[in-house]
Length: 64
Picture (tube, rainbow, N blue to C red):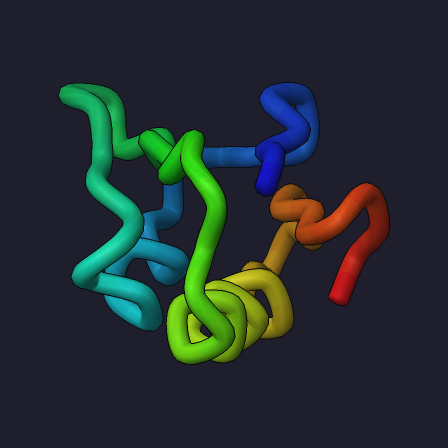
């Protein structure tokens, strides 16, 4: 899981869609999990990736 810092505008939709996995820094940018994800967590992160209005999140080396 990665975030493209140039595309991200700190909207925070990812944290809303994957609240248990994504936190926001003081400026609204996502803090992403660094370890391996369970299949349920991958599904939750996929929702966050697909819901990003700036397409700034990348899952498994490509956009989901």
